[in-house]
Image (cartoon, rainbow, N blue to C red; front, side):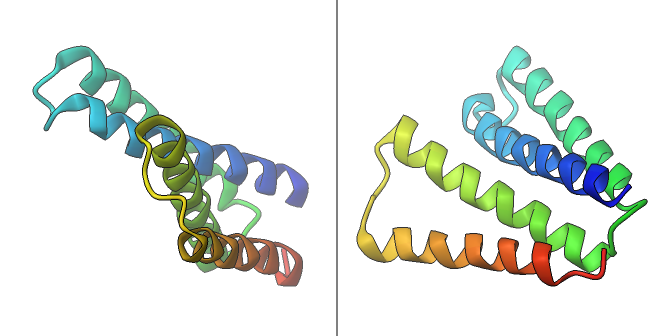
Length: 109
């Protein structure tokens, strides 16, 4: 059950990055189809997060979910929009990833 919860949480985090990215394309929710897609991905992300809570503590799951979303969103920004790839920025991403891995392996679940 625990591994299933972590896998579910991982995909919830990926969807979290997806809806954050989708917000860029909605143009303030003025574009219909990007808005519909973004809302659908939001719903899927929150649903998977809620499912992961059957096997994980709330604080751990939420921190990992937002961390995966943050890292995924920054990487998407770098790849798709030419955002900064500065060493300091990448080191900060590494700190977030370290926190996610730490929570995974130091968690009771």
